Every structure is written in structure tokens, then in C-alpha cells.
Image (cartoon, rainbow, N blue to C red; front, side, top):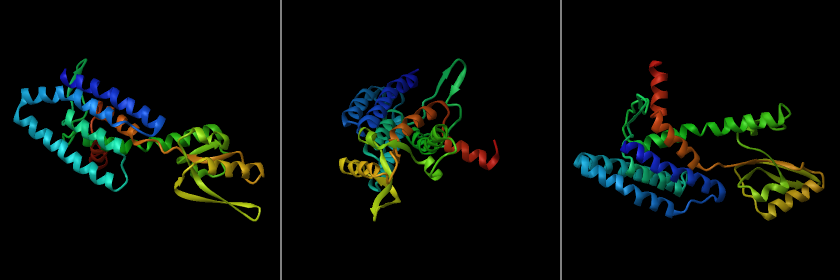
Length: 251
């Protein structure tokens, strides 16, 4: 029952962090401080009931995840909110929560390594494949087979130039006007959009050199994947372990 309460406690914070990250591309540090403060009740309760064994598990979980996220944060591949969410989860839920609903035991699969935050992260990484698949389906539904640059359907979508100011997106290509023609070049990492860029695009569109819509990439926050990974870890377990096991032994 206590594990269910931990899940119900953590879920709203993660869901709100997704909303905030999508809306403003920021998640306030206060959110994680409140989550950690409230979650301290569960931590203290588990220490009181389980004792040294729980403290050992907590130190291993929090210590390993802190070192791990610090390294990938320093490499520039991880956001601050992503790192903090996993650290707080590693403290409140150092091991996978185990519970039974209507005779069904969760998670459905026993993880190889009983460190919940690592399982959440692994699931999040694996679930990122949903984004390009979803974008491709959206583009095919909207444009059918009449797509000028098919390779872009997995990384972005077309948006009207006049609407770019209200979206958290980047241009997939650079636009360069040379002697009355426009050269378009793929830009790895995308092109930041500001008022100047929008003005230049509108000018090119008015000249008839480019269309009114351009390819953009949304750059969805990883917090969405972490939140999905959290729920998958709670209900199913470790996706990477189960996928690896299936590929090796077929069961």
C-alpha cells in the first residue's frame, strides 16, 4: 500500500514538470524541492521500518544516479530538470515499487537490477523512438505521399512562417539567398528562431523564393520521456532488460 502512495505522490510532480517544460522550456527548482520535502515522509518511514538495509539501498541508488546524471549533464546531453527528477526519484523510490491490484502483481516483470531510477531512465531512452514514429504518422496523415523532403518526416513537421514566434521549435535548415535564389542546407541541431530569422523568412516568402511553410523540429523535452518511463517502470518493469532477454533467448 505504501508503494502505491509513493507512486501517487510522485506522478503529479512529473506530469506538471512535463507541462511546464513544454510551455516554457523551464521547470522551477521549487518543484523538486517540494517533491523531495514531501517525499521525506516515505524515506523516514522506510528507514524506521526496514533499518540499515534500506539505508544501504538508498545510498546506492541515490549515489549511483547522482554520479551518472552528473556525468551526462556535464556532457551537455541532459537537462537540469531531467537530472533533478531522477535524483529525487532515486531517493523516494530507491527500489522498484511492488504492489498487487486485483490479484495482479506489479511490475509485471522482475527487473535485473532493482534500482528504480535507472529503470526509469532506460525506459525513457527507449521510449524516445515514439517521437519520430509519431512525427512520421502526423506528416503522412497531413501531406500524404506529396512530401518534398521525405527524410524530414521523422524529425520535424511543416509550420507557417507567421506562426513560428509562438512555438518552441527550431528550423531544420538554413536559408541563404544568393543571386536571386535560395540555397537550403540541413543544419545539425537546428537553427534558433528569433524575430530576425522570422523577418528574413517572411521577406523570402514575399519574394516568392520560398513557400509559406518551412520544416521545423519540435525538440520535445526529455521530461516527457522520463515521465512515460516512470509509468512503464511502475507497471511493466525494465524495458531494456526485457527487450535484451527477448533478443537473446526469445522469451
